Length: 639
Image 1 (cartoon, rainbow, N blue to C red):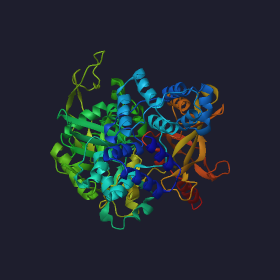
Image 2 (image 1 turned 90 degrees about the vertical axis):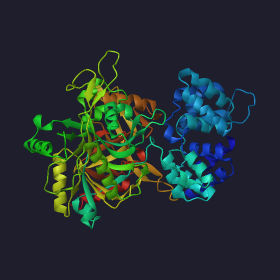
Image 3 (image 1 turned 180 degrees about the horizontal axis):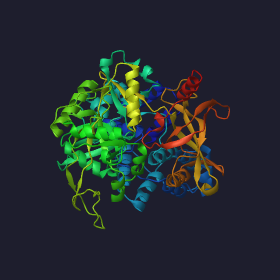
Image 4 (image 1 turned 90 degrees about the horizontal axis):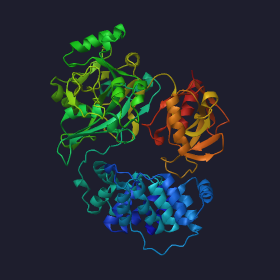
């Protein structure tokens, strides 16, 4: 552990990517394979391999209390040390260096012991975690304590991305980085990937279901003409509506233990959100084969034609009823606000499920027939997706719609199945909606294959854009049919044309108490975009946060109350009225235009910003950039 802590310290002191990789590679090569495998997992910022979904669940309050106990520091001394660094691990180093309690010499902690202790901590609950953590801290040197606290607090932050660990493994064992990356992606365990690399058997790694693969991302584009400039051959262009829902990756397959069909649903941030949508998980079992789908969880309105919809929508619904390719479907996707109430609810109530029904809209398939197929072009993956729906629906795949055919031709795995459900303590059926046939079974939500369209001119694309917005969707997705699926990467193979209202994804950096009825809550949010790193030699993935505005409207009272508690628990510096906070809460903000400003370090300010929604599905590394703000500002002056 001592050598490992020194490695972490050395990595944190350099901004050079090649030097970080060299340090990790040399450490890995100098250690037994099992120890190196543990180190690879820890260096990726995890206590356990990604596929396990195991968490330590250790709070800052417990770590702070044990730090005081082990070092003899007072609460005031701990506060001063924390404020010096804004990091509990670095504060621990200071307190250990000034330690006032003598403890007997203890044998050095090995990485194998650390991994075993972490598993005991994860398995323990409540106060049972305390003696395990205390034992580790009593045996730790100041530098070891620093990184023990960082690991247990889930805040390693040494400037080391998992991709650099993959590169280091390849360098240590003379294996191609791409093969190491692929093995790690298949296994969800960088330690196991290291073992394959050490044995020079990376080609033997096989896909393990139920751990998420990074989502392929789309680049924004300003208008139809700009978008089409990336597709000189219209035959290679596939167009879809851009839906206003929750990006979700579905894993369906046989459980290793029970052999029964299991479903896991992962968000774009790779969080397991299956429990938040229990009725959808049950519906997805209808796939009954090993598959990974990429798609969107949507708020869904069934029987739209009978609910006072517009004449156009009623006609679309009538066409859908008549379509042999749309058995039993009669509905539409609803805006994000209709699904927002479902976010973060691990055990949604029966009433919530009834009020906010959902559907799963599948637009890609990543794994099928025992193979990971992300390296096949989209045109082939689309055929596999069509085949999957054909087998479940019993109808031939629908061709892409040409512009001018404004009806949404959904292909759906019918929602007529019924699910037996457990009773709650009140004997109320969890999933029973108003149309449930009896108290013990319910209709399942629909699984929908996303319709596709074709266009060959900016005018046709504008028509499709208008039609998508008239259906309540955000805009369009344009995809190259020859494109491979590149996890976690953003390029020009996928483009998004969003609604004309200007919006940015930003992160909250500071909060203030409101006024009037909001005087007791933190309701005014200062927010930032990503700017380039202050170090010119830093890798492109590293960035600074530059403020561009402040907003205080758009969230509900409940959301503000919840956010107030979160910000109080994640305050970095409390200056009384204003608090700087951990930059983790991502917002989508709308605004009228961009202005030059010397008030913010970014040099820009948003005019009349308002919060559109919280974005828990988006990590900070993917918020908008200063370059994007500059582009918006320059485009204003071209009009």
